[in-house]
Length: 122
Image (cartoon, rainbow, N blue to C red; front, side, top):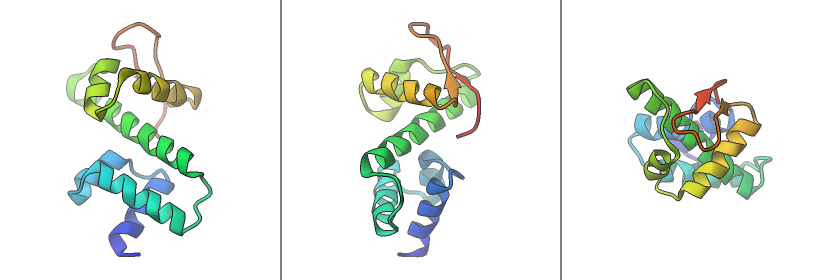
C-alpha cells in the first residue's frame, strides 16, 4: 500500500472526507478514489461487505454534491440535477436519498423540488 492509497482508505473509512473532496484534493477522478478505497478495504479486511462499501461511497458522493451545490447556489439541487452530476439515473438518486434520510443525514419532501436539507455531517 502506498501513502496516497492509505490516506484515501483512512479518510473515507473514518468518515473524515468524502470521495469528491479527496478526488479534488489529490487531482484524480472520483472513480479512481472509489476503486482505491474498495481495493484497500478488501486488503485490510474492512468490515463492510463490497455492496455496502459501494453504497457508502455513492452516498458520500451524493452528499458531497448536495453540500457543494447548496454552498454554490444557496438552494438544494433537484434529483435530475443530482443524476446528471453523478452520471446515473434519477431512480438511483432517489434510492440513495432515501438511505441518507434513513440514516438522518438529510431530509426532503417527496415530489417537491429543491426540498433537500442537510441535517448532519456525513
